[in-house]
Image (tube, rainbow, N blue to C red; front, side, top):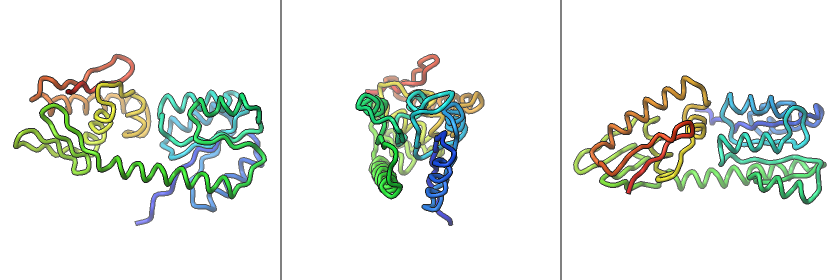
Length: 231
């Protein structure tokens, strides 16, 4: 089976540089979506799931910093690089304050950019492998996401893939807010009305599975998301 290509969202308003970057990234086996301004970039990000974002800072309609804020509101963890002709210290600091993994000033060496992209993707892949093996104790329940098993006394509930992914995200945010948009983007691929209704159905299923422990509750934080309250 052919390996799934890493998807990159590239936002660059210089048509020549944009096409050169897109072509070179595709030659390195990445699947690249190129958008010419920040608003189109945001629409693309809301439409599909990406593994990494490369954002020009100075773009029409929505600049790269504003776009990064919008992206971070949906997915705080996606690797994000700024590409910029702005070399002022204040701009670079702003970029890192917005959660950038790197701030690359133009002109830059494509080979160096490639090494940085590969390094950050490798780091994330290793982190994901570690996270895959994490198990959770929640009140009377023991949850093993790798086996998709939720155990209580002698009873074992095998979860569906979506139930498993959703409970894992709730467990990772235990006693804290899990934003709706983050869960929808990561598990369903986009934050649409219909996906939102689907997620509500899965939340109801998880509540049913956890009802044997009265100390566990999945609380709806209206308009924001959910919180798994558990000892």
